[in-house]
Length: 299
Image 1: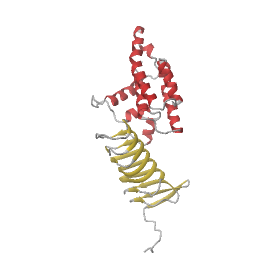
Image 2: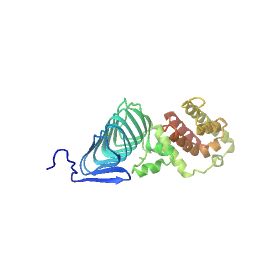
Image 3: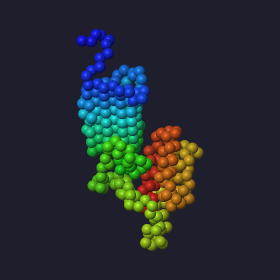
Image 4: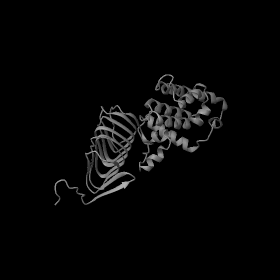
């Protein structure tokens, strides 16, 4: 029997170092309530639950409890959370991927996530922040999170989005059988299919009657210009990022041919700009780019 104050390493616990960070693997539960003296890398419970309730901010690579629940209370930053269930109860959580085989409950103060995936996702109306893409089988109801795109839209809009989902074993659902009122998701899926057929095809060469080309440009020009106005309004006047200024110049000049060729590069340049400044792109900007990309594919 151990004496009071003794450190006991239970059976089933494996400790390892990843560089200067500690990884903890346990067959049962893992509970982090104290402030780690050093950095954490990975927490994995093979058959139990994980509770992250640190008194100060914690950053780690991944948290995994495939057969249990990951509960977050505090300030946590991680690359990914993968569990049967995830419960974000309080504090702030920043994660690239939050994935659960059963359910995810988001009820903390602030969330900053790229992808949230589970059969059932609940979002408290009071939580603020961003979840760029959310996939669930249930209706989310009203909430304040920015983003909320489907995975098909995410793949369509985000460079390397498909590779990111594949790296986390996330499958994009086929939306061909979705209800007709889900216009935005269906449009994104159709646009992705069209782009895959021939990204290099020039619109004027595919038109059977050249006389109809100006009408096509006019039809696309209206929504594109409206989207450009929404994008520009998301930034302070006179403080447009250079990629947005380039986009505006092409739209204002009606140079949709060049815009169609360069729009993905402009989006990539904008992502790099935000990574170096404010890492979160306004929701209206993301939606505006999506509209522009969809309209350009009609040309």
